[in-house]
Image 1 (cartoon, rainbow, N blue to C red):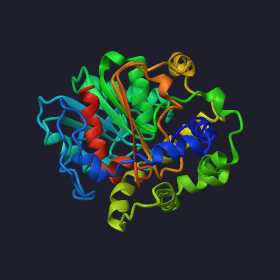
Image 2: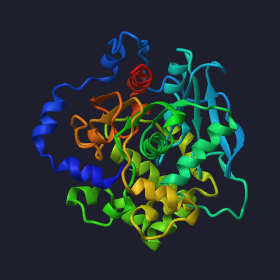
Image 3: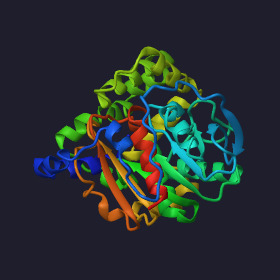
Length: 352
């Protein structure tokens, strides 16, 4: 999930900034009916949960992985790559993808390393999950699919991955949709205490740092129960049913799932060192590079990691054409909870 330092800074703004932004929040339905830009299409309104499955999941060898991904839309359409977070999978985009495909986009939704049908090609490859490693996985996927440039859209781990690619390889990015703003991790900042409310929200990160948390993640039944509990905390207004959760939870049965999740969170807070092959990229990311590609940032008003605001806490990181939106009554899994608003942001970013 998101960078606790970003949230800590935002929380420190107090209620004044939040009060200003909350008065102007749009619901998913109103965002769908508004013509946001004259040069971009208006996305048709859809009820979240209208779609439940992708027709098929394809596989392609890309870099260190055999990547599982859903694909929908015309083969020669402009490409949008949608990136999921934790604890989620490609089903976060099960409604977003057909909305974009109907507008002529070729939509690619990959399982990140350790999720779903994505597998490492070699048993000898370390099961690491530095932020740059995940970004390089997506670059490798683009190369394997012969995609030179794409709109990147994500939330949680997916936002971080899209932000990194936009910062380090901007020539590969036509536009960016980044939920929760700028999420590139600066590990040195993670070593400092945050506000008590922030630390409380990150309980699972500290849990994963313990042997007890490790055992829970390594037990399939325990981790599936834990991830469901996280859903209820971070999306308090989302009334998902058992079938919706179970479809996603299948991805948590990947044999590398526990190793990847534990590594990612332990690495972020400095408990373990990364692989040397990624050191040069992490050095660049530690400098918090700016992002110059056209960008729409989204905040979910009910996400405990994203206090209602105007995006000002991270605005300076984005130096190109830019828009910010806060989506009312929506929690952390923004694309699945508010697919119309998310799809509209993709279209509008593409036309900034």
